[in-house]
Length: 567
Ligand SMILES: Cc1cc2nc3c(=O)[nH]c(=O)nc-3n(C[C@H](O)[C@H](O)[C@H](O)COP(=O)(O)OP(=O)(O)OC[C@H]3O[C@@H](n4cnc5c(N)ncnc54)[C@H](O)[C@@H]3O)c2cc1C
Figure 1 (cartoon, protein in one colour):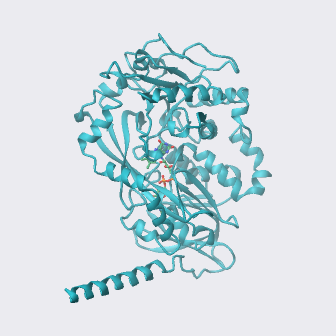
Figure 2 (cartoon, protein in one colour):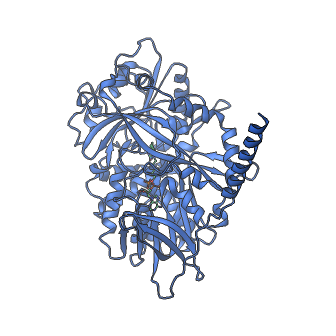
Figure 3 (spheres, rainbow, N blue to C red):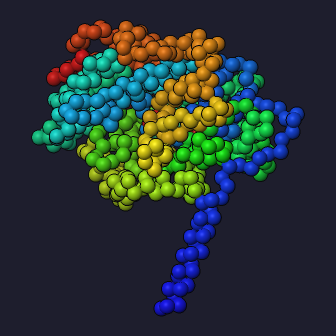
């Protein structure tokens, strides 16, 4: 026994020493021997997702002569989180996402919903502009109108009433209807009400200007357009393996051709790390002092999905519920209409999954490889502080098929297992960041990183993500190129985003004009509001609002709208 304990002790010591050596390993990329005559590319975009595609599009429109190289490790762009099947395709506008509104001391705080709604207005203006320029094609290939409905039952009815009362004060949420009449909710979202206990108290709000978006399609179309420019080069099946600083202050981005195994580098003045979940890992390679405060915690998502026409025909809406107590924001359950590559689906989820991968197509070693002396303590502290999240993840991961069906039945009581298949979505890597007053904090939002000297930038985190990509990349331009944004780029930015630098929530007339314009261009549902007045007219039936490519609009929808309040 004594001998065994001795051997065990020695083994633990050896593992601890190896662990310490591993944690203290150098993480920054080794310097590359460059040549003075190497060409210098103006911009390198790492990753071919919606963020890089959006930034590349802005920069090409602002500086047509700048040279841009995009590196993507997969054999096509838009195949990771931005792919239509890897996310929920919600154009997040705060209309139905109850996690963006919270009640504090009896007061409803809607600031976050206002922020997200304003940011999505920027996104729609950017996409509208690109449609008008011929950069994006038929809007139906990437955006389709679906009502955004918040749905609750039982004790949460009171919450929804208060939320609605607070939200309709804001111009961004004018026209939001509320009802507690099951017959009306059945018209709005038949699947949600069929077979539901008639005694259950229910309530729903609806916004008609909601949308479903295929971010993968936007990515592919933006990159296809960039490829028409001689200044742009796309390198697929090419993985970025290092980022190092050169003596002349440029950066060398090292990459490997995954088909030939050949490694090389490109010299650049400006790097954007748009590598989705892998961004934190790549940022660490730069060795920048300000990059050392980050670590990542991956959480995946799974969806139940059906293309059964008998079901999809009855649902043209996104219906969001309320997350259970202690559940993280990205776990809000929702049953959604999706339009992907011309086909209609209904999706329910997400169910959280756990793997150590930072990308769906990544490696189980990702989390381990990103751990080092700088972030091991913050990661441990966050783990201990967020035991609720750990418990939630464990409960999600241990769900059986029946458990998942039962969750679905809360939103579609008559759901049958045989209609649905489980589909693995993308990975979201939540940011763990050192805080001034505590070791670390787990963040669920997105963060724009720009180095002190403005030469390296990155997009970290995942939510609300793709919906607000044009807004997020605009923020990145402001931080990385402040002089140009304030100077020679300013008029063009106002052309692309008409409301740029204006507060839409404070200017109902401008908001109305912008929504009319973008809705007309993008084929979305928006009825002009009588600004400042109470609108009593109910929007047209769901059947009227189904997109042209939806041959299966709900037969049940009727124009009669009892017991609906709108503002
Ligand atoms: C389950 C789930 C549901 C979601 N739902 C929504 C939603 O409803 N609405 C919404 O707006 N957002 C949603 N999101 C978030 C949204 O998907 C992301 O914010 C968005 O797609 C991120 O885009 P990106 O360009 O940063 O990353 P990605 O689309 O992941 O692109 C990153 C690219 O970088 C490449 N790459 C990585 N490492 C390297 C390397 N070393 N070298 C070269 N290339 C590399 C990857 O292959 C990938 O193509 C959801 C995400 C998930 C996971």
